[in-house]
Length: 247
Image (cartoon, rainbow, N blue to C red; front, side, top):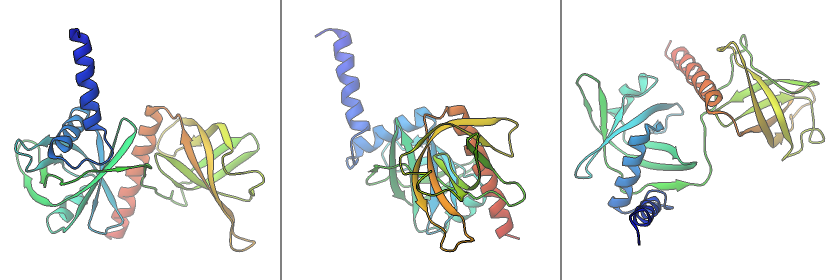
């Protein structure tokens, strides 16, 4: 076996460790987290049973598998919730696979750049379906989605993974699985339209004649730049909601 064959075999072996279903061995967990640190992968942080989620990135894994260091949370209110928390839930996606684990706060590290130390997880669970934090646009700054030249609807909520729209259309026009190749999304925070293939995933009928139906749609094959624009909008809107709650 040649050198390149050996390296290929070693990479495949590590891939099996990093991307196996559920990670229960400390070696598996460490390799997974080290890979995520190298990739500067964004993570979603949930604290206790709060409905609000926060964003961060992994920075370091403890040499003795005794802790993990993450960057401070965004929005910053989350950093105040960490210390008295009883449970911290971390979600992240690598190579299209979503993982999740629970941890506990250890301490805040002060220095040139502040960071947060949490407990090294005992198990990392593989999640089959990606989840995204959704926000509803404000009434005075609506978002619209143009599915075709004749279909232009207001957005009920939006995430990196898709949108839900209010519509008078029925399951006849919006059958589950129907694809719109060039849906056009207009965000109030950027001076450009976002185009993406979308697929209908659900349709909930309004419970009264004067209530519109709600259609859930998933983004397909969206450019990373456009995902980042949506992620930025979701985070900005989330901060607005938090600030209003604290008034």
